[in-house]
Image 1 (cartoon, helix red, strand yellow):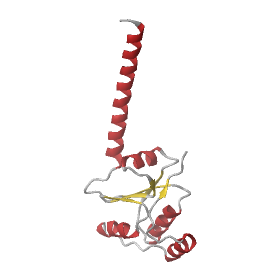
Image 2 (cartoon, rainbow, N blue to C red; image 1 turned 180 degrees about the vertical axis):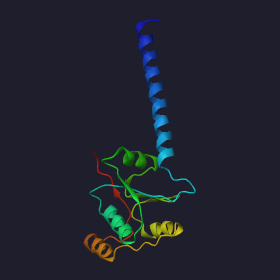
Image 3 (spheres, rainbow, N blue to C red; image 1 turned 45 degrees about the vertical axis):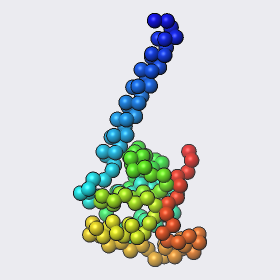
Image 4 (cartoon, helix red, strand yellow; image 1 turned 90 degrees about the vertical axis):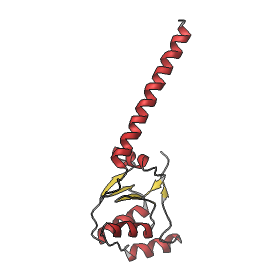
Length: 147
């Protein structure tokens, strides 16, 4: 085998190994972060700078709803979760078996009620956000900042 053919074979081998590693990584992320049909956990994928994320946190705290939170920019768990849940902006919430992309109050309330939790968004946060941005309270998500 000539040197060029050996180099091509090595590159093909490296590409194959890399593809298998990435496939395994994707499967792990999906297994670890996508909620199952019987899930009762509440997990938030957020950032420190996101106003909608803060609204969601405050609403959950005010409603005494227990949750776990991962910062998608600072933690591996957060990055894996966003990838597994196909998040393109924050917040992303895994509420029981439901995944909610963005700050969609009606969907969040529905998912929490299905788990037996009441959710009342903080009135002061709702009015402050919609007054300052002109956006409705159900405006959605904030796109992640480019790194």
